[in-house]
Structures are given as structure tokens and as C-alpha cells.
Length: 477
Image 1 (spheres, helix red, strand yellow):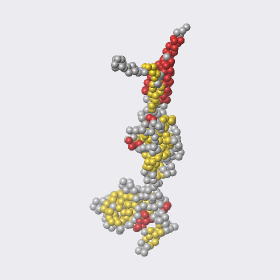
Image 2 (cartoon, rainbow, N blue to C red):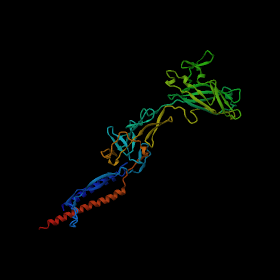
Image 3 (spheres, rainbow, N blue to C red):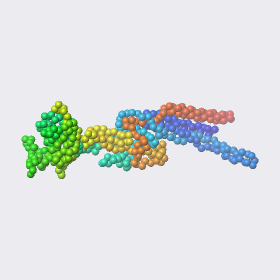
Image 4 (cartoon, rainbow, N blue to C red):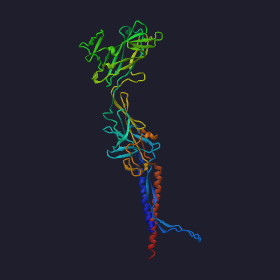
């Protein structure tokens, strides 16, 4: 009879533990990425009052089973539904990240500076030092860095710094290509007189911008035009060639009588930068035929050889120019009522080789494979780093340490310090979303009813056993 009392007491304790777990689940029904727990009951030892015996075939007597009386119940295990993903909550915040699992359960790796933890909660923000950190704890998100060539280095994970002096700007690029397009009308009076002026803007390798000015002048032959470089202007509107106090070019003459311009105190033959070229159109159709110079065979392009301006100690502003290939194939010689629309553009028709100024960081995006890119106002998109995720052989074996974080245990498997790329098994990261709690309220309330009745039934065992004891005591009056 005393056994029933103690068994019922163990039942009360175990059902109370289950109720504690249910209460915690319900309390965290709106906790980001919370994983619901459940309690598993287990029998306690049995008292054997009679052991089992075997039968006797000779006498025909059968065997007997053991006589055992159970001594109650205990908490066998508390399991976490860690593989069950919660619903998605759209936030629109690019640093809110949700893990979409395919074949494995993935975890973000975070660090407090000393220890590494693992979490499904993807509410991150950029702190004052430019690191991606958990909003709730400030733990820094871990991942892989990139080398100088923009390649991901998949070694030991470290804190991801997405904003710094190194990432706030994107390096400029020198212009290497340009093209001339539009209509050059043979009745254009400017083309017949001083020459139709066209300009091409370009950048040097430090991002300083310049403008090359050309004159396209009609010759005595229909469909033929002379093209020559007249000047190169810097961003302040001044010629890069040396001028005197009155604003006139400082010139000299070489042994062959050629006029040389002065550039940073040294003579420069503009023909070495851009040779006077001959632009030819088909007279019957008005389409481009070819362009050529004395040292360049007929083709589509003429080189603007700006590299001759570079000195051993670098040119203006300490930077260097790159040669620019100028394509004339999209120019036309049509009737446009005496008005020409011909003009120059940097870059080719597909936009390559335009060159770029120094870019300022304008935005940060996270790709589905965890790669973090910086967008810059010069059009560049640069890979800054990549998020690494952790996978475990037994994710349910992780230990909850609060604040939506877990740590490894002897039964979860270790973290190798490197992690894996989330897209390796088809999983992905969704930006602008958070994972919600996977607590199912209908299941929790059902479990609560069952737990309440179980607790109630065990309390009835205690009161009934007490009544029996009372009757036993009352045998003697």
C-alpha cells in the first residue's frame, strides 16, 4: 500500500515536469525560431516478489512468470523538435535571415568573442564596428572571408564585418573602350568648316574623369572625313596640356617641323596619342565603311594611346591612363536636314570597358547561398564575405543555453570550426524573413488536458491509498 503512495507521488512529479515543459512551450509560442520540447515518461524499477520458474516436461507442470510490482514513473527524456521548421515571417529587413533546410538541419554560427554558439534565430543587425550581430545578444555572426581577388577563403570561421574602411568604397577602373555612333550629315556646315566636334569622357585608374575632344571634318571626297584629336580636358574644364598666361598652348617644333605640345613640361606629339584618321562611309548607302590612319590599317577602331602621357613617376594626380579602343562602326552618313547627331560614349555597346569612378557603398545584400555583396554607386557589386552554417550528426543532441542559442554536447557531434556552405545539400538562406516558433498550440492544449487528467488521477491514487490506510488503522478500536 505504501508502494502505491510513492508511485502516485512520482506520477505527480513527472506530470508536473511535463506541465512545466508545456508551459514553457506556450510561453515561447511567439519566440523567434523557438523549438518546442516534449517529455517522455519512463518506468522506475520493479520489485520482484517471485522470480520466474521453468516448466517440467516430465511431470507436465508449466512454468511460472515472475511476480513484479512497479514502483512508479520518472522523466525518461525531454526531446526537442529541432528539425521541425517554424513558419516564415516576412519582415523586409535585409539582415533578417531564415534558414531553409533541404536535407540537413542548419544553424548560424555566432560568437561572444570567446565561445561559439549555434542558433536558428536570424535577426541580425550591423553594429557600430560594422559587424553583423544578433539583435538579442550582440553575438557576432561567423563566416568566411574573401581574399584580394574576391575568392572565398573557406578556412576557420571568423566574425563577418560588412562595413569598414575597406568595404565602404569600391576601387575605380580606367576606361579601355569607347564608341562613336549617330548620324554625320554631309551638309553639316560645322563639319565642312572647322569640323564637327565630338567628345568622349573617360576615367584614369584612380577614377579621375577627363574628356577627349575630337574634330571630324569633311574632305573634298564625298563620304570621307578627317578625324583628329584637338584637346583633352580635365574635370575642372582645363586642358591637360600646358598653356601660357594667356591660355594659349605652349608648343614647340621638332626636327621634322611637327608641332609639339607641352605636357607637364615635356614635349608631346598629339599624333602619338591619336593619329589623324580617315573616316569613310559608303556613298550609296551612307553606312560606315572603315577608319584608318597612317600607321593603322582600315578597320572599325582607332586607338587613343593615352599611355604615352604616363611618366615613370605617374601622371596627373599620381595616376595612370590606359589606352582606349574607339569603335566608329556605329556611325552613319545619312541626310538629317544638315544636322549631325554623331557623338562618343565610353565603353563598348555592351557596357564593358567604360571605366568607373571611386564607388561609395550604397547597399548590402545577402544571397541565397549566404554570400554577402556590397553595392556601390559606380555600378560595382563586390563579394564581401560568406555566411558559413553548422550541421550536426545529431542536432537534437544540442543543449539549449537560452537566448535562442545552443551549444554542442557529447551526443550532438562537434563543430569543426569551418562549417559548410548552405547550398551544398540544396538548402538556402532567405533574406528579409525570420523563422517563427514551431510550437503547435492545438497539440500543446491537448497535451495540457492529458497532463491535467494524469495529475488528477495520480492524486486520486494518493487519497484512495490514504483511505485504505485509514481503514487499516481503524481495525483496532
